[in-house]
Length: 379
Image (cartoon, rainbow, N blue to C red; front, side):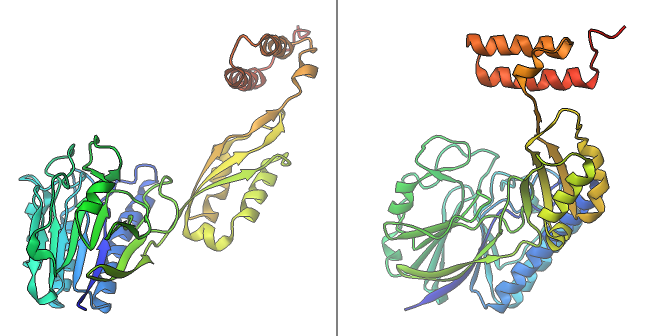
């Protein structure tokens, strides 16, 4: 049985601004996007793939460096030298139209960029047909699979499709709202999807397999975990595909309980002892300080961040601790703090206000009072 070897990649987002990061680290991460993509292309060449499927959002936004276009062309030329064909389904970040970056560079005859209506490209030497469609504008509010039916002559061919879109059960959406039933009715052997930045696993509906490869590099703290591409073989009604990790660094949201800490030095020790030196120096962390602390202990997130900066590739400290307060005891104090606690206590007991809202009001109020506390006995 004829097998087609593919490499499925999506959502590279070249020249991402990385606004959340310091300028020098953002510059480094943009360079690392190129580095990862180059390694992906080299892996495809080493594995002797027949096809590279790029399922959208190669570019991130409305601006791109000229050197990035040159870099992408160089990668496509590398594939061309090994007779590897490339199919691109442009996404919502890089729609294919007259103003598209795709029209600013000649990517080569081995590269096909799908237009906004589904196209069919037959590859006789591979006994394969590849379908696909691109975004023409930022939004695509109707599924490209709506009313799609494969041709009768495709019956004995390996059938592959490349699409960028949002898969689910909802017919309405702004980013090519694909339906599960449309995937099943497509009769494809494999559909390479882009748009979701997390590997979906290799899924199957009816006789059709599909997957989101996810992005090759995380770009923010909403993109935790391993990132990569899909590599392997597709044949009539069967496949053998694997997820290949490609990310150089990972993003981590790390909650650390500092309830027992009484000084910033203890907090720093807790952070450094919780996260290994190897991981700190390689990855990006948003550290969320949790727990109940004494009201006399003020957390200065910026100061702690500055003191541990040289121990991390990148870290951001977020203070989500709560003050350890006995509201019953404090409401008996003769002070502004005591009066405030008494008012909150009465409101809680009367149940006239939402408990969660009162809790937030209590925490914010106490922090404000403690920042500039005045005792009523003071002259």
